[in-house]
Image (cartoon, rainbow, N blue to C red; front, top):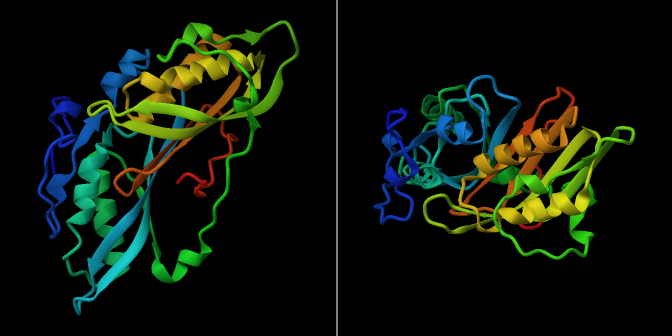
Amino acid sequence: MTDATSTNSPEQSLLGKAATYKAEYDASLLFPIPRAEKRAEIGVVTNLPFFGVDIWNAYEVSWLNQRGKPQVAIATVTVPAESANIIESKSFKLYLNSFNQTRLASPEALTDVLKKDLSAAVGASVHVSLCLSENFSQLKMQELEGRLLDRLDIEVDAYTPNPALLSANHDEAPVEETLLSHLLKSNCLVTGQPDWGSVQIRYVGSQIDQESLLRYLIGFRNHNEFHEQCVERIFVDIMQHCKPQKLAVYARYTRRGGLDINPWRSNFSTGQKPDNSRNARQ
């Protein structure tokens, strides 16, 4: 496994590079990237202004049982936001594929290995669960709740994030509302490939101007940053410019390479830790 040090940068990863797929277990394929540098860009240096998780769903998980018969499952990995590192997604895919010709005693054995390796990579304890093929029919699809910002007929001419657009009406009584947009698009920090997502914003505080918020979110369209970093940027920008008492930001991104990443950040304990239901685009 690559050491999780500050020398690890996205440019050193296998993103955008030809890679040989290993079909037998190899934990060294995991490539952790420290969160600290991108957090420093948004002014988060010491105490985190949020807590939360990154929910990874892996749809291409397979291994061999002790008799050599292939097994398949969907894995869910929950990484705490306070972990020192994220895992670069292509390395995660290569790591998962290294189990393809690996014999394991049971699904529980796979879960144990995943938990050990991924916890070591991110620098914190992760939660891992498997949905086996006989339970696939129990999985549900559900859209995010919230008042749809996309209904607004606005004119847009800027496609980079501009937090100065954000505003709230501090002259009126505080409100509690949930806002939603399916127009979130950002690009991979290294390859520039598009990442598509839906974002839900729950808050209590002065009412946020919805047109300005939608313009701000659309501003990520040409922005290069990883999923987790985009969500943390959105959280910090809203807190600084709209000053809600409570805020939770949750994004569900479409899958790439058999993986989807769904970051959630909140500053209040009743921020309704999100359900991991797949939405229509996932």
